Amino acid sequence: MKTRLSLKFLLVYLVFALCTFAFLAFTGERLFRSSARRSAAEELYREALALSALQNEYYRNHRQLDSASLDEKASSYRIMVLNTANTVIYDNQRQMEGVLIDGFNPAESNQYYRIGGFYGSFSEVCISVFSPISAEYSLLGYLTLHQSAATADSRANAFMGQAYVIYAVIILFSLMILLAIYFWVLRPIRAITTGAGEYAAGHLQHRIQVKNHDEIGYLANSLNEMARQLQNTDETQKNFIANVSHDFRSPLTSIRGYLQAMVDGVIPPDSQEKYLQIIIGETERLTNLTQSMLSLNSLDEARLGLELSDFDLVKTVRSVCETFEGVCARRGITFELVFGAPEIMVQADLGRINQALHNLVDNAIKFSYDEGVIRIRLQELGDKVSVSVKDFGIGIEKEELGKIWTRFYKSDASRGKDKKGTGLGLSITREIIAAHGETIDVASTPGSGTEFIFRLPLSGSKE
Image (cartoon, rainbow, N blue to C red; front, side, top):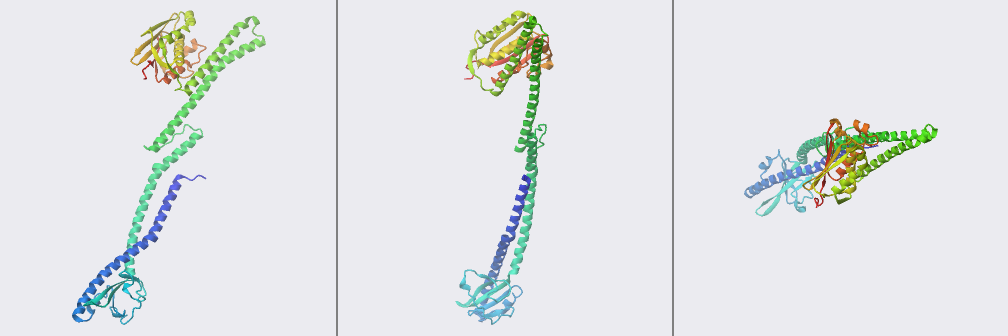
């Protein structure tokens, strides 16, 4: 069974409260009581010193104790005077006069007070202090003052009451801190935990509702963004599979249909060559589709795995154009090559750039009119070269411009003109240019043609 983090915090809080209370009740009470009794003893001792000083003066003048002044203190303290034989010669309550205090020895410790029954003289706990009475350098006895310890303890109890009030306030404030932690930390963490469980269960549409503007809020927003991207990836994957299935199904159906017709004898032997050529064409279409998918996959897996080298872009463009001489000759399409210099050296992946140019030129040929022109322009701009591939064909509708980079997307016009296209050429081209740290732009006007433009760094520009 899982233990909630909030319960752990509450348990720690209760343990803290109980331990603090126990410390205050046991240790704190002893400390307050000891401190109160010590303070009472100090007050008594100051009073005893004052009284003994008066007795010293009175005895020098009258050769006896001043009982009257001692009787005045009867309501405040218990006062006794002991002679040097430890016999009580004065007691303001007249109860112990003539009684021997056995064991009384002021020199037995360095303390000026005693706490207890004063050597068995009292039944209750008292605080007792003593001060010597002397005349003409002769010790006459000791003046002792006694006060019930309960009086000092009542002060300690008052202090304890105040301490308990302070304790209650501290516990209340700590409870407020605990509540703040719950609302600002624990509850958002619980929402994040719930969200993580939903994502683990595949419910990517779930969103974590956390409004914190701190690290917890950042974590929640990051998880939401992760879920959103996973959801988009899931949708993309489904569309990808659907597109792949559609593009594979059509040629496979044709191949199967023609082969089955040959096996069944529906197609006579003298006509089989024609349909075998169709089958070969469909297999080439499947091969191109598979190769394009492999190219995209390799780009996705190793975007930074480019084999950079210095090569002449002019020579590369000419080589690409030569590969299309056959199809261009059949349709009467010509190339207009505009180069800013006889030789333009760039630093890029030769194989990938060759593939990108091939895709752009192939796309331009598909959308060009017969007897049309395809213009390829190379122009140096600072430390880069601008590459433009422009046709003067049917163009692309404005609402379709943003979709042409989507994998397997084919415009309505291309579906009618290009039966063998895979819809991956432009996606591959953009991935190649992006892998070089550049972007590719497109501008098109329906009926006037389309232009693709991208840039590449010149050799030595990155040094």
